[in-house]
Image (cartoon, rainbow, N blue to C red; front, top):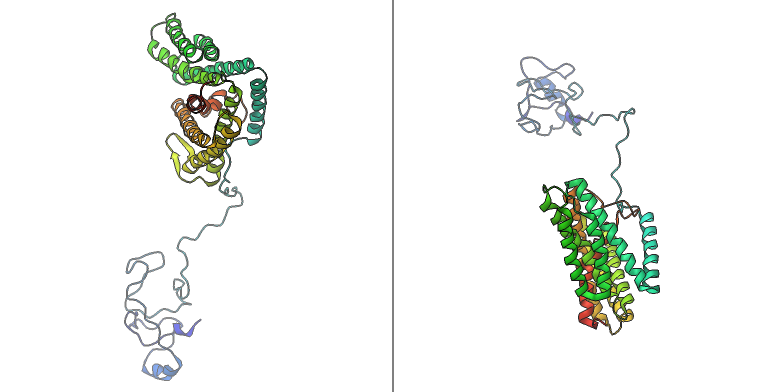
Length: 376
C-alpha cells in the first residue's frame, strides 16, 4: 500500500473525522499523533469534491457518509487507487457455447472454377462456329435466343403470374436472327413486326383476363432478347464479319472481367446500391480501362481499316453499354425477387445472365463499326 493513502490533516473535499470515532484499524486521531508523525507523512493529494461517477447519487460502488472518517483502501473494496475496475466486466466464455464466428473473408461471390470452365467451353464453341461456317454461328445465336426467351418467360410466370406466349416468341425470335443475317436491318424489322403480331393473336386464344400485361411482356421480351441479338448476326454480314463479332465478344468479356476484378479488389463506393449492391464505381473505372485498352489493340490489328483511336471509343462505349445492360437485368431480377434467371450454366446462372451485357452492347458496336469502317 502506498503511504500517500494514509491519513493526513483533512483538506477541502475530504470526508473529515467525526464524532463517530476513527475507522477500524486507523491510527489515533488528535494533535499529538499529528505532531509525532508530521515528519513521517506526506500530504495526501486533493480529491475532487464531486466524485467522478455520479456525485452524491447511490450506485453499485457504495455511497459516501458525510462527516465520516477517511476510509482506508484496504477497508473499502470500492476504493481503487490505481485503476478503475469495470462495473460490468466481460463474462467468461461458456465452453458449452460455440465460439463466435470470425468476420467472413472477402469472397468472389461465385464458383470461379465452374465459371471459368463453362466460359472456356462456350468460347471454344463460339470461335469454332464463327470461323468455320458462319451459318452455324447464326444457329448458335438462334439457340441462345430461344433458351433466353424460355428463361425470361418462365420467371415472369413463376414470380408475377405473367404468361407471355412462348411459342410465337421462340419461332419469331429465331426467324428474326436469320432475317437479320440474310436481309440486314430491313429483314430484322419486318421479322420483329410479324413476331409482335403473332404474340397479339396467339394470346387471343385464352381468356381476356390479363391480356394486356401478357402481350406487353411478350413485346418486351421480343425486343429485349431476339431483336437486340439480331445485330450480332448483322455484324457477321461484313467481309470481316467474323472478326467484328470476335472483337465485340472480346470487349464485352474484358469489360465484365475488368469491372469484376477491380471492383472485387478495390471497390468501396457503390455504383447503384438500390439496383445492384455488388457493383462499385471503382469497378466501372476498371471496366472502362480494360475495355479501352482491349479496344485499341483489337481494332488496330483485327479490323480492316480500323485504327487504335477508334478502338478507344468503341471500348469506352462497350464499357458503358455493358454496365447499363447488366444493371437493366439486375433491375428485372430485383423486381422478380430472384438472384439468377436460370441454372443452366454452372458458375454463371442462366443464359440470360450471360446475355445481359451482350444484348445492349450489340447494336452499339454494330453502329460504331458502320460509322468507322463501313458496313461492308
